[in-house]
Length: 398
Figure 1: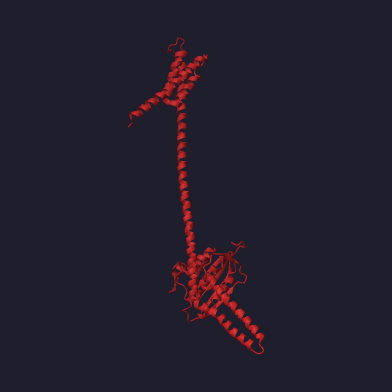
Figure 2: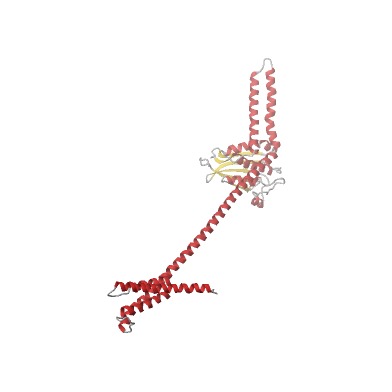
């Protein structure tokens, strides 16, 4: 419901529009009279009608047409300053009023079109601003989600590194007896050789040749013990992820040297088929050693219950297409069930009574972080084969 103030404002505005129309036509009359036209005293009246319609609308425009027609009839058509009604005057006024009405109608349509265009433009601006604000908010939300994801990935990588370190330490703990035997052998040889060296030197005259041989053996055995300790420290210490170009066969030999005593203790014969022309790969030495170590230890443990056939662990390296190096670790144990193969690489899934189910899961994560793939298959006769493939280094350090 309109209030009195609203009604008053509308009446005032309407009166102002009609007032503008009346003033415009009156000015057209005054200017036309001052110019004393000889023919067609109508151009300024058309202008007055256009102004009235543009600023007032169709009502003031029609009012301007009627007012202008009356003034033309009174001041210009009739010579006696009266309103003429004869046919010639009416025809002249019709020739003015009809185009004037059309002009008023066209001006009104033009004004409506411009107003509609302005409103559409304003609405478009509002929509653009709203959409821009929505996009800005969505972008900020996306940036926040990206930052949160990056933090989650960093936490995941840290947790993965911690789990990998824990798995290596647990593996080394399980191999503690073999490691002690591995280190004890060169130490015992050093003691025995040292005693022999002392005896050679105690002779009269001293046997310097044999003493030199004993010292050389002591140095060799000491270096052997140092290498064993170095390999153990490299696998057990918590290191950062450092990639470099590596020869896969060297990594395999280093892990085999670490597991030599374990193979002897479990009566496992090791068979190696390593391609001597194997191309280099790009990766982290310790992490890839951990993968090979996990697969070999799993293969050895898979044959613990084998008594009716030879225990043989086979390791093979070869170049695989397209542009990959492939390593296979094959045992002749009890093999894998189909449902085990499906879940074998899931975290905390294990087929060993005392296992925690993290070794193969971490191994697959390590291989995939190097751009490779790790998978397992059941052998046709006995046991299972674990294989992983890594891309060949392109020589650019990546």
